[in-house]
Image (cartoon, rainbow, N blue to C red):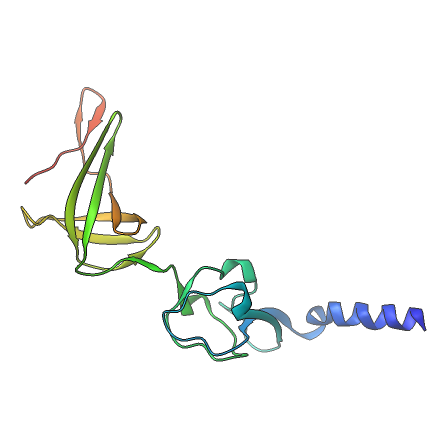
Length: 159
């Protein structure tokens, strides 16, 4: 009897290898814009097309939904994104860094983005637009665009 129990348990654990793939699915309906917690998701077995489907629960924790997710529905990577830390039209702090120098300036976000995403920021004084990477709530690190002087990189701001 014990052997039978172990065999049944082994078959249940190995089931995805025999006809399906273990995928991540919502445990309940999740509204668009909600940040996912570990209690919102579980694993299920999918037997159909699994291209682009999320298979690891830790990969989705802390991400935001782009659309309403239905309970038990397979979850695709394009359904998720990093939470928006910079909203379009908001005032942001632009950070310019060079060896030994850190400059900050205010700007207006022309697009929205989450952590690590690239956004466009407009300098309100000159109306020039730069690209920057979101590094925190309302903060953008300007991408390289300094001048070279004697081998040292310097940041240039044009009002």
